Image 1: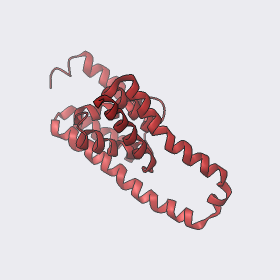
Image 2: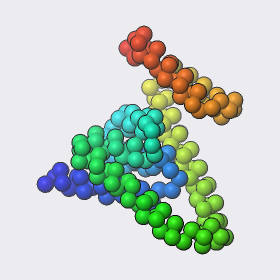
Image 3: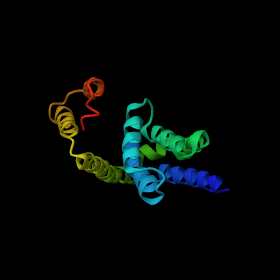
Length: 186
């Protein structure tokens, strides 16, 4: 009975997060952390960081990838399916409704202003995600992690290096670090 209650809570949580989160997967990750780590205590901060990395690196929408990982980690295959369903229903319904009245939406100046205002909020939430993740990484005080984080930021933000090259470089660095025992030398 408790598992069914928790499965329902997982579905409701992902449905709610997906329905009321604007700005994409990076915004929902912060709210998933608040829900599944801080409020429900179903996963740890470290597990959430790992799941965030998996969700970001897997192909497809980040929100759905995060739902897959969190659902599977917490309640197995059924949890994964319910988390996916909860995550995809709101955008599917909203996009379907908007497509019906698309012309009215794109020409309405109030909707345009509303969406512009939402962009500021989305930007703030993305900054919050970055700050929260950086704090958790900096708590470990592993110099290599801090150097990688700062170098990636400088390459992407200031030097405008394509993110694909940064990710490929990080894959190589992570492989070398793992092969040569870097994970044991912490």
